Structures are given as C-alpha cells and as structure tokens.
Length: 137
Image: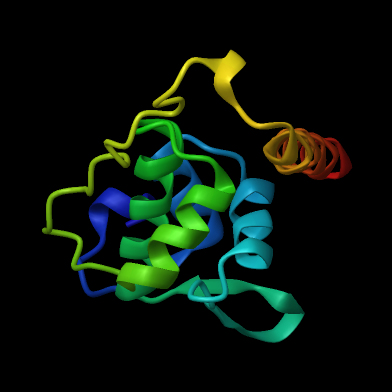
C-alpha cells in the first residue's frame, strides 16, 4: 500500500501521496498551507504532514479551482471565505459570470484607474511570490 490510490478513502495521506495523486510538487502543497487558513494538515515529529480526508478533499478542490477552472490564488481565497469548503461531491462552482469589463475600457473614469492599476500590480505580485516559492524548494 505505497500509493495514495491503494488506501481507503478515510485514510490519512502523506504530502508525498497527495502530491503524487494530483501530479503537483510537494512545495506547492506547503505553499497552499500559507495561503489557505482552512488547510491545516496534522504535523507530527519532524514536521511530517498527514492530510485527513477533509484536508485531502480541500486540496483537491483548490487544485481544481486553480489548475482546471482558472482561478487565481486570491480568487480561491475569496471563494472559500464566502462559501466555506463545499463537500467534495458538490459540483465545482463556475467562475463569476460577471464580465471583466462591462463597458469599453476608454469609458473607465480617471478615479478608477489607480484602483485598477493596484489590482493589476497585486496580481503580478502574487505571481512573483508563487514563482519565488517554487524556486526556494
């Protein structure tokens, strides 16, 4: 029983088993723990992580939202904060259907420009933080 697929659904998963199941690096899971307060696996001696079934379901949900549905880290944070963590069997929530720019870009008021620029810079910053976290591990 060495791989995550061999274990019962209610068994705890190690970080290695969960990362192998999802096809992502272990440092990504550790990074997600810093970004999503809902994700708190048990840590034993030597900081070895054990993901409970609910933790594993949350990791799968985060992975789906980020890598399959196109959400950003911030978008997933907002989604989880407002809706909690739905059951894993629940269909994934679609991205917000609100159009990104309901008006032509030229109609945006001058007072809104600093807020838009700030949002773009924050999105770039988040991407850089992720890239740096990936390089450190």
